[in-house]
Amino acid sequence: MLNRQNGCSFIQHPTAEMTSETTLVMPVTRDIFAFTDRPNRMHGYMNAHEFVTLWDEGEGDTFKADPPNAVLTWTDGDDVKEAEVVITNATVSDYGRTIAYDVKVETGEMFGGQKLGVSLFVDMSHASYMAKCRYYYGGSVSGQRKAQERCH
Image (tube, rainbow, N blue to C red; front, side, top):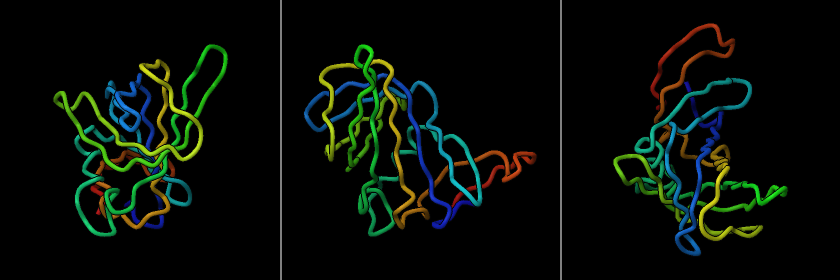
């Protein structure tokens, strides 16, 4: 079972569009991949609705109270670019097919318009909101057993 000590990271790989200086819009073409690090390696997928619940209102145990760090990477010709951001909010629209992120750029520069080949890496391992981690994962530390457990 995932808990605060295990930590989670999330990866999303679609195209992306900056619709303003602080709004990043990404289609959800696949579920969002989530994984933990040692010693309790787990992995699984969250749909857009499950993922944005991590920003639900609350004190101390949500992304709303303690926004996650993230790195956005993309290609520009032959160059790979990146920006470190803090995601202060996320909303789902288009029947779960789009997530709009409110971002604050910490380092680097965001691209303008739309980009292909974008990857968003969201880190939540530092915060106290693991109790809000609501996704199902498959497998075990050894990867031999398939299980479905709800994070609490």
